[in-house]
Length: 344
Image (cartoon, rainbow, N blue to C red; front, top):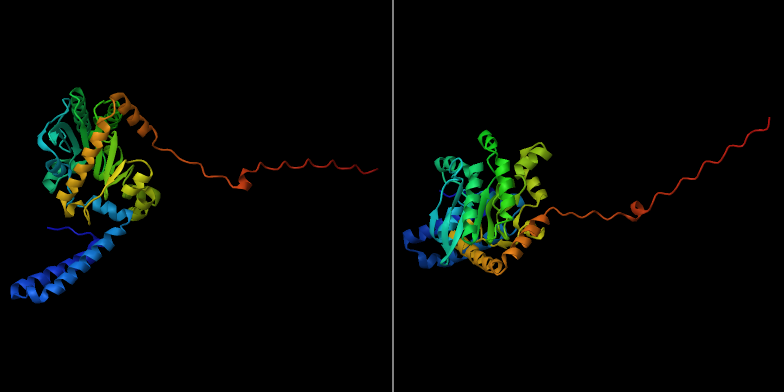
């Protein structure tokens, strides 16, 4: 069943009218007579679709990033790579199914693929914990990154998570420490690493797989230190202010590229990746192969240096320029004149 967002209503209404007109033409054998009317409506639908998706707000892009029919990591893996063989377990506690990982081939070249995975229905979402990884998920990812490094295999990570799981069990097994170790160790892995934000990129849960030589983001994905709802609850004491928070956080792909937090924005099909997963995967594959070729040309030492400097540069700010009046040093006050004594 199709899922539509509120701002897509004008498009959906036209689409339904077009489908009804086509159905009437087929049933009554009037394709020739109604062909011109159908063509006009198709053109209007295309124009409306372009107008709607050309001016999406940050909050609307967040909604697209969370679309339940949006392609997830395994959808991209099946379209971009071949011979994928999933590997399991962190060799310490368990196999976290919120993180999938394994060996694959990209145009014949052996690679390691790692990513967060959401579910399509309630049963699968529970099994995959809605894409929110436990500590063992990050430790599994790091174990396989080290394996890839041992055999000089490029590493591709795909990120689509609201954040790491914040439950009691995750805290007991040291979720913060697991993410911190990943951040540290990923700066030391000599194999090329390319990360892609394909949907939600939430907080440290996303960053724990995103310390890479090149960070790509899909056009309607977002990457943020906190969800818009969480930010709204803290700053405005009201989760309904999420659209305002999404605007203030600068979490859309274009804003992130402007701020230097990602290296490339990969375009999506009109209306979002879920409208044409094959086309979305083809565009992403082209970008991944191009970036892998660029990064592979660097010597390991240079690659590590650039990767380290890239993430050390995050968080820069610029002091506002002082006005002329504010910059001028304060004028010294004149000393009070001594009082003259009265003659007695």
